[in-house]
Length: 151
Image (cartoon, rainbow, N blue to C red; front, top):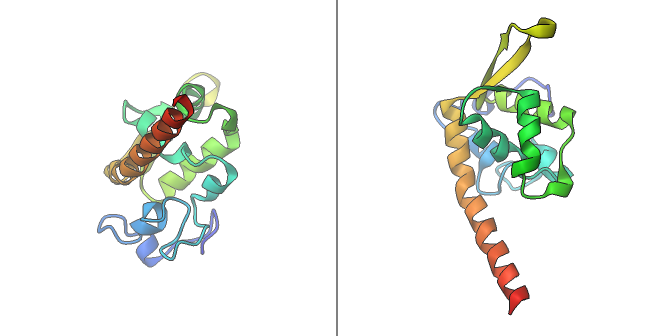
């Protein structure tokens, strides 16, 4: 397993051919390696931020944004309002997404010296596509749970 900030080699970096992709968003979900073990760069899922990665990618689909703008939108769209990530978790997730090629960033000049702006890449779009079935299944299951409550 690789920890945050450790050098990655081989199939971990080769996102263009799809190799290594299962490590980050495979059949066991983000935060799991191919054997289903927890760990990897998206381990924040175990800290209650399971939807942070797809949420950031979805928010970036509407256009490039800086971290604080994304943070401001998270409270409106995260499915678990009580599990709001802190600033460092958001920036750590953005850095990890950038590390695997799912987002790209650049410095933009502005007041106070500038800010880093993030945008989704084609690899990020592919990663998001892998999340959609899982999110849809969670949506169906929550709907069934609510329906049981109502009946």
